[in-house]
Amino acid sequence: MGRRDLAGRRDLTAGRAGSRDGGVTLGVPRWTLILAALGALFIVLPIVGMTLRVDWSRFGALVTSEPAVAALLLSLRTATMSTVLCLLFGVPMALALARSRFPGQRLVRAVVLLPLVLPPVVGGIALLSTFGRRGLLGETFGVLGIQIAFSTTAVVLAQTFVALPFLVLSVEATLRASGARFEAVAATLGATPGTVFRRVTLPLVLPGLVSGAVLAFARALGEFGATLTFAGSLQGVTRTLPLEIYLQRETDADAAVALALLLVAVALIVMVATHRPRGLS
Amino acid sequence: MTGFRSVRVALGLAAASALLTGCAGTAGASSGSTASSSEQGETLTVFAAASLLETFTELADRFEAANPGVTVTLNFAGSADLVTQIREGAPADVFAAADLSTMAGLSRDGLVDGDPAVFATNTLSIAVPPDNPAGIDSFADLAAPNVDVVVCAPQVPCGAALRALEAAVGVTLAPVSEENAVTDVLGKVTSGQADAGLVYVTDVASAGDAVLGLPVPESDQSVNEYPIAVVAGSGQARLGAAFARFVTGATGQSVLGAAGFGAP
Image (cartoon, rainbow over all chains, first blue to last red):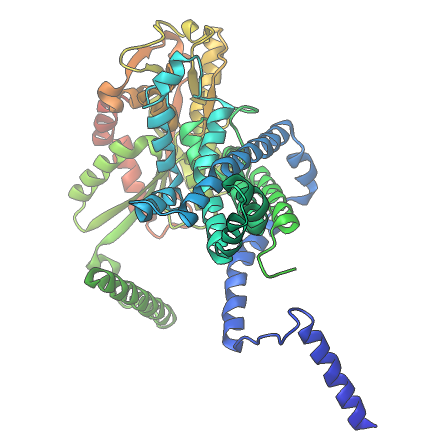
C-alpha cells in the first residue's frame, strides 16, 4: 500500500516537472538562488521603502491633481509615440545589423548603443546641438517653419534617442538566435525579400519585438535628463511625469513620492501585461 | 589590461579600507575616542545653495587660510535638495540657503541652531543671448507673442521672486518653459534655445560674455535674501558659527559684493 502511494506520488511530481518542455526541469545550484534573492531584494527594498513613505490619506488627491494628470497623460502619449518611432526605425536597424555585412559594422553597432551609456544630460546636450535653434539641423527646421524647441516633439525626440537601443538590441538578439534558415528556405522557394520579411522574419522575431517595444516604452516613460536639458518643462507641453516628480520634490515631498508610485505602477502594469521573455509560455 | 587590473585592485583596497575604518570607528566609539580631532585638524562641512558656488568656494579657501588646520568641505545643490539631505541626516555643519522660506522650514522643525542670519541679497535680471535675437528692451517686451522666454518654476526661489516681480511691473509672462533651477534657465539662454530668461544678477555676472544682462528697474521690489545657520546637532557648532560670522563679516561681504550680491 505504502509503496504504491510513494510510486504514485513520484509519478505525480515527474508529470508536473515534465509538463513545461516535455522533458526534465533543470535544477539550479542553491547558491545561485541565494544570490538571486539578494539581487531581487536590492531592487525591491528601495521600492518598498518608498511605498512606506506614501501619505495614503493624501494619495488620491495628489495623483489626481491637475498637474499630475496632465503629466501622466503627456508621458503616456509621448512614450507611445516614441515607441512607434523606435519600431519604425529600430526593426530595420536590427535587420541591417543581424542579417547583412558591411564595412564598419561593429563600429556602427557600438555607436547605435551609445545612448545606453551616455548620461541623459549629455544626450540632451547632443540633441540640443543638433535639433536646437542654433544646432546643426535646427536652423534648417527653423527655415521650414518647424519649431522643435520647447515643444512636445522635443520630448518625443529625447525619449526616442534613449529608447531606440533597447529595441534594436532586443530585436537583433532575437534575429541572431532564430537564425536565417527559414528565410533562406522561403527565398529559395521564390519569395521576394519583401514577402520573406512580412511572412517569415516578422513572425519569427515577434517575441523579441514585443519585449523590445515594452522596454523602449518603459525607458521612454522614465526619461528625464535629456528631456529637461533639451525640451524644457511646461505643464501639458513638455513636463512629463518624471519632470513633474522632480518639480514637486522642491516643495512637497509627499506629492513627489505619490507621483513616483504612480509611475512605478504604470510601468509595472505595462511590463507585466506585455513582457514575456522567450521560453515562457 | 594593467589599467583595468589596477582599477580592480583599487576598488578592492577601497572596500577593504572602508570595512577597516568602519570597524575602527565602532571600536573607538565603544572604548571612548582617544585621538583628539585638533591633532589631525578639524573638518567643517558646509551645504550651500548652487548660486553660491563661486563665492563660497573662495570664502572656504580664505577661511582655511585664516584658520590653520581647518578643512572646509563644500556641498552645492539646489536649496530644496540640500534641505532634503539635511532632513535625512546628511552630515552638514552649516547651511546657506538661497531664500528665507527654505531655511524657515528647517528652522521650524528645530533642525538649525539659533536664528539664521541674512548674509546677502540677490535680484532678478533679464538675460538674453549676446545678439539679442528678439530685440528685447524691457520686461514688458518679454510678454510679446513669439518671444520664447524661460523662467524658474514658482516652486523654486527664483520662480517665487519672479512672481513678485511680475506683480511689481504689472506684466504677467507666458513662458515656454518653467525650469527647476536658475542654472537651467541660464543654460537655455546661453545655448540660444530661448530668446530670454529671468535669472539672478549674479548669474549674469558669472556668465560673462555668454549672455547680455538687461536690468529690470522694478527688481528692487522682489529681493531674495540668503540666510546662513549652523545645523542642529553639528559636532562643529563653534567652528560653524565662526564660519557664519566670517561670511557675514567684512571678508565675506567683499567677496559676495564682487560677485554681484547685494548687502543684507
